[in-house]
Amino acid sequence: MHYLITGGTGFIGSALIPVLIDNGHSVTVLSRQAKSSSKQLRFVQSLDDVDDGETLDSVINLAGASLAGKRWSSAYKQEIIDSRLSTTVALYELISRLKAPPKVLLSASAIGFYGHHGDERLSEDADVSPGFSQDLCQRWETAALSCASLGVRVCLLRFGVVLDRDGGAFTEMARPFQMGVANWMGSGRQWLSWVHRQDVITAMLFLLEQPELEGAFNVTAPEPVTSKEFCDGMKKHVRTFITAPMPGIAMRLLVGEMADELLLQGQRVVPSRLLAAGFEFAMPTLDDALLAIYGDRSKR
Image 1 (cartoon, rainbow, N blue to C red):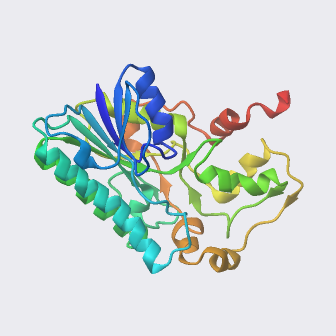
Image 2: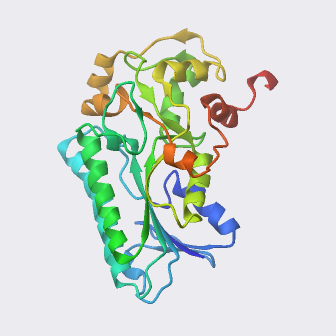
């Protein structure tokens, strides 16, 4: 099988590509940086480098500037939008000129699609609440769904906070704990819908192999936690000496609008459609995920 991946050098893509190659597949990666290719792994700097007659079995769209990469100025918010929409529109243009379209497109989105709902449990058919993240995800998903008109099965991956030891949001989330400080943000009652990166990869492989599945899928663990519960979970695996919650006002001073949009409010999201389709999470609880990241503390 031949896969085209955008955003393939990011946190999720860098874990997915070795799995695909180990399974005997070939991968073409869209990357802004010039990289050397090999027999199974090719890098292109533009989708124009993909020939019309090339056979792509599946496309995986993971491209997008980090939501937490910089303070949210008007310019950076536009970069966040453009980096997602322009790549997704370019994929539509590529697929429309291919002699044979790929069978499936997996396109990243996020649980920010739902907006803020307090303690409400959110499955894929939940209502939405307006906001920057909600508008961004809705526009991103609409662009991806346009590929369905070209005969492509489209799966929208609404990612929660992806956890693993060597990157992503977890690196920053874990930093205070590694310095001996246990903390949570704001009230601590806001929900954190998380998922371990290993389950993200296996969920994507699952969706690639199930031709009857399409539409939106929450890629989150079955048991979301509050910010305070995340802190308590971390304390079981990392030795801390003081507890010092981060007040909401301090977060707003540090990161501005991003604090209210991403950090001080959250979504209680559940993966209803994945579970209904028979997908099994290797790490359904936060303790499972932290054990995979840190190992058994009692054996250290």
